[in-house]
Image 1: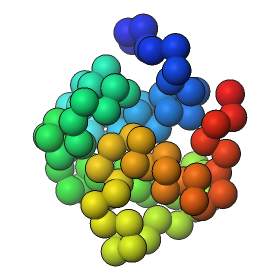
Image 2: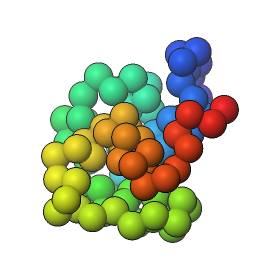
Image 3: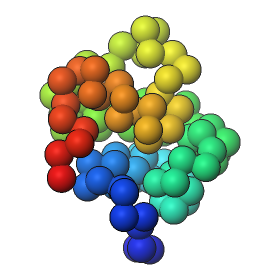
Length: 93
């Protein structure tokens, strides 16, 4: 694993790692953490994206409404904003 920026919270890194795992390692962790492009820009398939959403729902006990959140779940930051709206403390350190 590479060094992460100081402002990256443990949750930000965890969600990025989940995205990489859901894509079977095809996404670059550094790029996903940095948010330099969307998951699709990095080549994440729709099936991998659904695996990521399923993982988030299971690990954090949330429900992700894909229709309501369409277009906002394209990066780790977008996922964290959505999770914040679902009551997850995304700023916990």
